[in-house]
Length: 50
Image 1 (cartoon, helix red, strand yellow):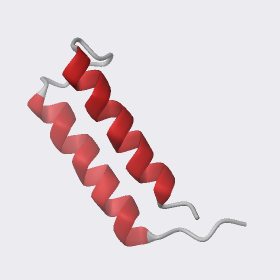
Image 2 (cartoon, helix red, strand yellow):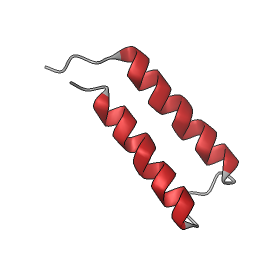
Image 3 (cartoon, helix red, strand yellow):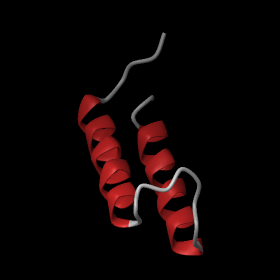
Image 4 (cartoon, one colour):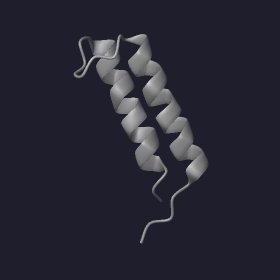
């Protein structure tokens, strides 16, 4: 079973929502910058599961 770090998970979720809102709520990435931000938000959320 995983131990979840809720603070890191919240930061990742907040970053994901913020960057998605910034880039226009697109379902799929429309630019390279959006693709990088999606990857970073996925990485932060994955880091919460240690």
